[in-house]
Amino acid sequence: MTSNATHDDLAPIRESVRALCANFPGEYWRRLDRERAYPEEFVAALTKAGFLAALIPEEYGGSGLTMTAAAAIMEEIQASGCNGAACHAQMYTMGTLLRHGGTEQKKRYLPAIARGELRLQAFGVTEPTSGTDTLSLRTTAVRDGDHYVVNGQKIWTSRAEHSDLMLLLARTTPREQAKSRTAGLTVFLVDMRTAKNKGLTIRPIRTMMNHATTEVFFENLRVPAEAVIGKEGEGFRYILSGMNAERILIAAECIGDAKWFIQKATAYAGERVVFGRPIGQNQGVQFPIARAYIGMRAAELMVREAAALYEAGRDCGAEANMAKHLAAEASWAAADMCVQTHGGFGFAEEFDIERKFRETRLYTVAPISTNLVLSYIAEHVLGLPRSY
Ligand SMILES: Cc1cc2nc3c(=O)[nH]c(=O)nc-3n(C[C@H](O)[C@H](O)[C@H](O)COP(=O)(O)OP(=O)(O)OC[C@H]3O[C@@H](n4cnc5c(N)ncnc54)[C@H](O)[C@@H]3O)c2cc1C
Image (tube, rainbow, N blue to C red; front, side):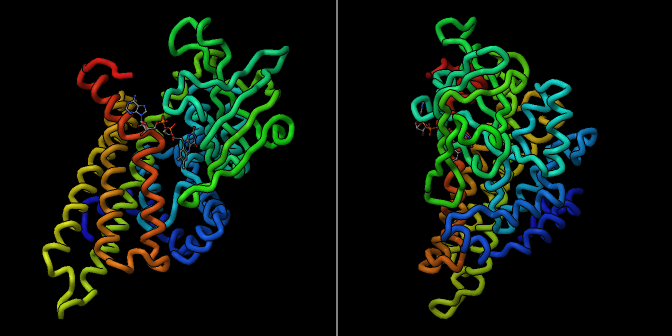
């Protein structure tokens, strides 16, 4: 597959990611998928190579790369057939600490995160009853001397079992007493190494793909007051400010997935002979592949635009949302096309297509669902009335 996308100045980074990923072929992911096991070796290799510290500034020991470079890393991981969902949060969750944390907190945590000694992979926002309506979350943190006492439950807290730290959003002021609709929520950097069995319980949730997601229960968990990031009550704003990075990077992963599906389908359509000719000679087979390619390229341009705005320090809320939306739709369309192109073999484990198909399905739902992206564009870009 030829595309401008591979001819940019990030070619050396792309090549080294690809070289690393070549050590983790389909058999590796298939075995883990069967066992629902965590890709420890893969995550360790990415960490050791410094890829997961791409966005940590050099002064804190990271690589200080741009969002465009970080997006290229995530894209190449997916385009190589690997699964960055096992560790993508290590790249962007630290952004909340970087932008809103105190000097001491940053010095204490960021260099250790950059060295891979501390894993900040868990992001505890979603709850079973509040869902997308984050402002109605029910987990509370009540001040008690130099601690807060946390009670409540999170759901879909991915990688909690494979992380040392969790960025937790909890309510510190009851909703009816908060000074505004969005005030009263606070972000904590919870050290799960000391919290486990002292009020923090993690239970894995088995899902249709291998995603290491969990539900997390807090029962009178005592969290030191110095774990608060920024100001008490301002947490919702801090979490929102990190979401653009998350959306851009996950959009880049979807672009990588789409490229993988398109490459697989193209290769197969060229070699599979039925009725005495390659199936790819039939327009009925070619056109869906071409359509998927066009969709991927259009989404890729939006990802680049969002990343460029992000690194220029400009508002990129609309572009980050649109990039995530277009890229998630493009990867899902490419996945469906790839199964169809392979006929029965699309369903066979050893082709990896059914696994990637299950994995990429997530992204029209998480980290934000399609409807909520559409609501954002309707309200904030088009000026239509707020619908919820
Ligand atoms: C595998 C996986 C991993 C995840 N990892 C994390 C994580 O690490 N940390 C974390 O905090 N969360 C995580 N999530 C949660 C994820 O962000 C949410 O599932 C997602 O935002 C949707 O929320 P919900 O599941 O509560 O759906 P709901 O909010 O219950 O919505 C259900 C459906 O209704 C639609 N809907 C709801 N309200 C409206 C409305 N007003 N208008 C139109 N449509 C509406 C939604 O679009 C959706 O399709 C993960 C989820 C999954 C499945």
